[in-house]
Image (tube, rainbow, N blue to C red; front, side, top):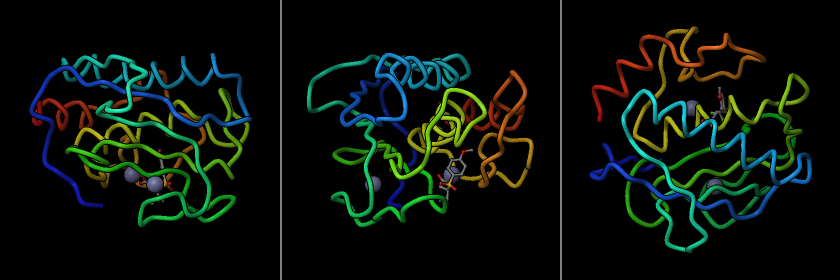
Length: 159
Ligand SMILES: COc1ccc(S(=O)(=O)[C@H](CC(=O)O)C(F)F)cc1
Ligand SMILES: [Zn+2]
Ligand SMILES: [Zn+2]
């Protein structure tokens, strides 16, 4: 993805567009907000939810071709993707709604995947450390502290 380096502001707005039918909207809202707060705590950034269409970070559940050059692939495979910082699609985060999204251990845990994607939306690339949230493959569950020391150092180096 065309990745900018970093956002040049400390307050970022996000809007949740199309939801998944796997979870209640209120549960999706809280999991997304929790995933943002993981990075807010480590970076000092502030994330504000908005209904306006020019939010910095657009969050949507979509399937197959959905308006960008990265169509999803049905169940499994690619779970989600996010654009790096920037105008327009910059920061936008899409979840493949052909996956089974969960708030627990079933299917794919939305909180874990969202936190990883928001790392990309803030400008982080992948880590080679399997303990890091930014490691490229999904792990069913992580310890309470989602971010590794390396994840924290990387976001602090950026903001
Ligand atoms: C831990 O969070 C994730 C791990 C792996 C993925 S992914 O398998 O969808 C990955 C996309 C990504 O690294 O964001 C793959 F390249 F498609 C998404 C989130
Ligand atoms: Zn997309
Ligand atoms: Zn990734």
